Length: 511
Image (cartoon, rainbow, N blue to C red; front, side):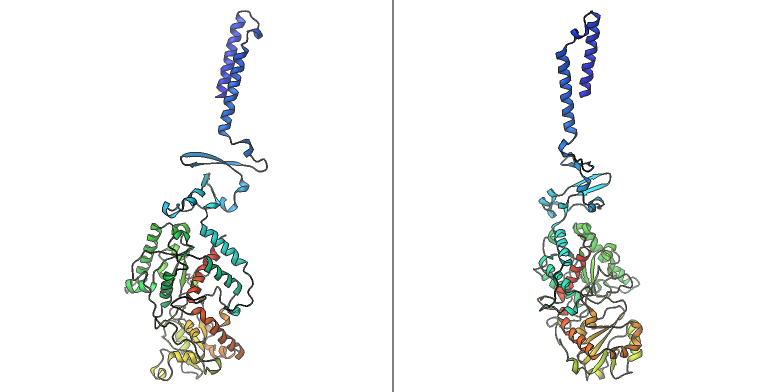
C-alpha cells in the first residue's frame, strides 16, 4: 500500500515536470510542494500502520537469545506468538501427542481455559498448566518418598523386616494422605462386583469387597483418581465362562479384552495413560494368562497376581506386584486358629502335605517321603496320620513348613506358615514373594533352590539355633501384614496390597 502511494507521487511529479518544461518555466518554480509533501506523509503513515499489524511490539524481542514465531488458531482467530527456545522445557520439545481431551463433563472449565497447544513443523508446545492435579500430587509424593526421613525405631513397624523401613513408612503415609481410586461400575455380577471370599482364591475377593466399601480411598469423580480399578474376579470368570477344550483360557482372555475395550470407549482415562494407571487384582493361576489378548493391559497396567512367575514373561517385576495367596475357610472368622507353639516346643523339623501336581513336589516326595522321622513329608495327608495330628496342628508343631510350587510358582502354604508361626521354606526358583519390593524375606523365611531338594535336611540343620529363633520371631512380627480384617486396620493385608500397587505407580511415574 505504501509503495503504491509512493509510485503515484513520483508519477505525478514526472508529469508535472514534463508539462512545465515544455512551457519554458524553470523546474523548481514549477513544482507543487504542498501536494508532494501531502503524498509523502500519507505514504509513510500507511507503511507504519502496516508494520504495526504484522509484527509484535519492538519491546517483545529478545537480543540475548534467538526467537521464533508459532501461529495457532484460537476461537476461530489466528494468533501469532513469539516464543523463546530457552523458555521451553526440554521434555515438551519431544512430547508425544496426547489422546483427545475428555468431554466437557469430565474436564473442568478452568482446566480447559488453562490448557493450550501450538504446532509448527511437528513441534508441540504444551502449557505446564495442562498437567492434571493428580499428576502434580503424584510428583509431590514421589519426591517426598525419595527424601524420606530416617526411621530408626517405630512402635508399629519392625525395621529388620523391611528392605528400607524409612522409605516404606513415608510411602505408606503418603498413600493414606493422597491416594484416591476410581472403580469402574460397568460389568454385571457375578464376574464383576461379587467377590468370592472363601477358598484358595480368597485374596482377590477380600480385596475387592474392602476396596469397594472404602470411603477413605474410593472417589466417585474419576478426575480426582490416581488409580483406576478394573473390578473383575478371575475366579468368578472361570466359574462363569470356562469350558473344557483346546482353547479353554482364550475364551476368558477374549472376554477381558472386550471388557477393557468397552471401558476405553466409554471413558477417556485408559486412552490418556494407555492403562499405566489402571490395575487388576487376580489370584487364580490363570490370572496373568487371561490378560494376554489385550497388549496394553498385559504390558502397561499394574497387575496384582498370585502367580508371580517372572520366568515366562507372564509377570513383569517392577510393574506387576505379587499378591499373597490366602486360604479362608470361614468368611466370618478369617483369622481362625491363628498362632502356634513357641520355638522351643516345636518337635518336627520340617513338614509338607498336599497334592503332587507340578514337577517339584514329586521330587520332594521322592527324596523325603517316609525317609526320615524329622522330615514329615507326605502327599495328601493320610487319614491315619490326620486322626492323630491334623494338617494345621502339624504346622503349629513344626520348625519349618515346606512350600513347594505346584503347577505354578505360588503356594497358599507360604501365608499359612506365617499364620501358624512356622518358618516358610520356599522352593520355587522363579517366584517373586509377596511385597518383595518392601519386605526382606530373608529375615523370616528360607529360600531353597529346586536343585537342592536332595540336601534339604542338611540345609535346614546348618541353620544355627539362634538364627532359627530370630527367623521364627520375625514370622510372628510380620504376621500382621498378612491378616484380613472385616474393617481394615493400618498395615494389614488390604493396605499392604494397595500399597504395593501405589508403590508401583509411584516408581514408574516420571516427575
